[in-house]
Length: 83
Image 1: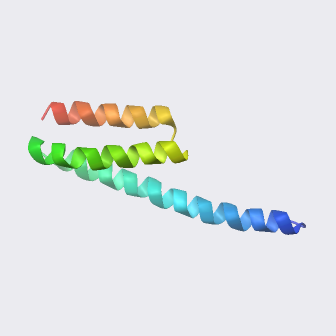
Image 2 (image 1 turned 45 degrees about the vertical axis):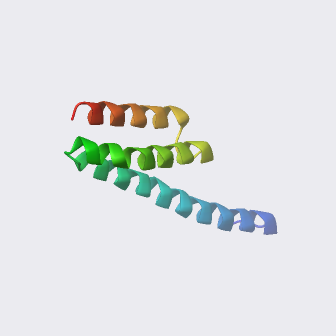
């Protein structure tokens, strides 16, 4: 167990940040799953800016790596263009 006041605070802080990051990452995965299930191209194109924006925000905050964000967006674009 930690012995210093600052390390106890860091443990609390890390835990709350970890939970927030898990929430955002899960939200992104759910959004990706939902948009991939859409079979109508017009509807998918309507949802695309929201999902891309969400992915960009997570990459900017460092929750996901920028290369992973680029790969996710690229795969999403391919899927929607092939509808």
